[in-house]
Amino acid sequence: VANYLMERIGESTTVSVGKDHSVAGRTAYQLIAQPNAANSLIESVVISVDSETGMALDVKVYSVEQEEPAMHVGFESISFDIPAASTFSFTPPAGTTVETFETPEGLEDGLKAERGDKSDQAKPEVIGEGWESVMYLSAIPSEVPMDLLENELFADLMTTVSGGKVFSTPVLNVLITDSGEVFAGAVTIAFLQEVAAR
Image (cartoon, rainbow, N blue to C red; front, top):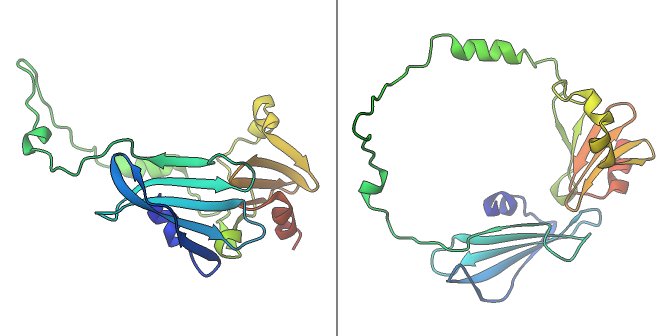
């Protein structure tokens, strides 16, 4: 998660070092990345880095919509000891019969045929860059059942806006327009509508 987020840090991001602290019993320092993007839902990304190994120990993603982290993943405990080789050995219990199966010939081709040829489906396109990039699909993928959008439970998660409906979380908005186009990104609803109107 830390690597994925750090790869997206560019000129539109202010990076600073936070407080020294402890995570999972290890001393760590903080890298704080703050987007310089008015339309981004991300307020900051805080990564705790092990001061000895340089390994990410904890990642928090903060949204402009709330105070508590919108996403938090990290270690509660960690050991860098090399496990004994015996840890990975397996001896079948007495009386067990072990059989090795080969993948049946043609199985992969059969699975591809079952999934169908998706070459005619809309391919995602990225509009913009950095923290304000938006993923665009010209149509909802065919594997998404359209009646799902009318399902009462799913409908409760959608908000009707000018030009379509929005599924919203603190760090992601998805706009499905009345014409069936899809715009998604870690940006405000107003920005998605602006992109959709271009």
